[in-house]
Length: 317
Ligand code: NDP
Image 1 (cartoon, rainbow, N blue to C red):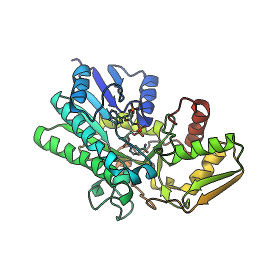
Image 2 (cartoon, helix red, strand yellow):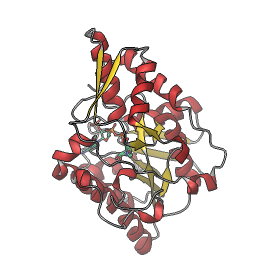
Image 3 (cartoon, protein in one colour):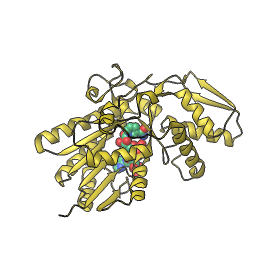
Image 4 (tube, rainbow, N blue to C red):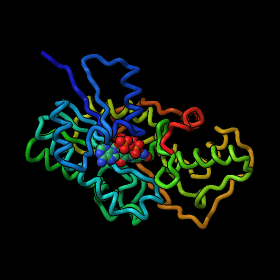
């Protein structure tokens, strides 16, 4: 029996796509060919371009990462642009169905959960109330993936599922100060401050909000596991344990430590904090993989800082 697999990764040039590429390249996996597609290969907002991509590669499996992604300050002012994700997801799932893809894993996020909810959040709560006002466009577009997955399964028996990562960080992140997430933004700003000889590092917000962060290299391993071993249509949260939740203040100090920066850190409370917390339970993940070991936070932050120091010229600034 020919069990060779062709895995198409949409969004393959991004933070998570690059981590998966590095992992599968290192593992030299047999009977698997991996294609990492970016916007250069197809604009997935366009149905025809999406279908052409799928017809060209005829994937058996898809990891669907492509999305317009941004940090708090980008989301607040651009909710309409983030609804582009509706088109991308619709096109990718339709093309997957039409070309007979066996399995699709798409990507939700813990930041799309209801704003007013009980903690910890779990997979059953995705649709139970409006998301935080700051990112309603991104959130509703992402939530629709779960609806599409259920509908494709109901009508056609498609194995389309989704994962819900917490905040991701690592090499190849987006270091743009307008659109980047908190970790790459702090890394970029502290790098720039140190280079400019400044002795005061300003962090936006009070530093009090709490977040769970997953290292992209750990997430890559979990994605490959979900693709081949996880057989539910319902989403699964891919997050570090609740005990690993950290404040932005703690994060800022870890970034400073990784840079060996010992000068002053100040918190600019005139800037928005965003949601105070969105603690997610990884109990479902732990029920499948009780022994999965996450990279310790300080090591992952250090590796990410070292990567940026080495690659800042070619990084997405
Ligand atoms: P990045 O912003 O690093 O990468 C986005 C990827 O999507 C890039 O490869 C980009 O291609 C591609 N892309 C964007 N728009 C289009 C388009 N119209 N057509 C084709 N490709 C497109 O994202 P991440 O790696 O951070 O995120 C991956 C997934 O994980 C996303 O679905 C995101 O929502 C989800 N997620 C991310 C989290 C995070 O903290 N980063 C947290 C939780 C979920 P190009 O490089 O060519 O522009």
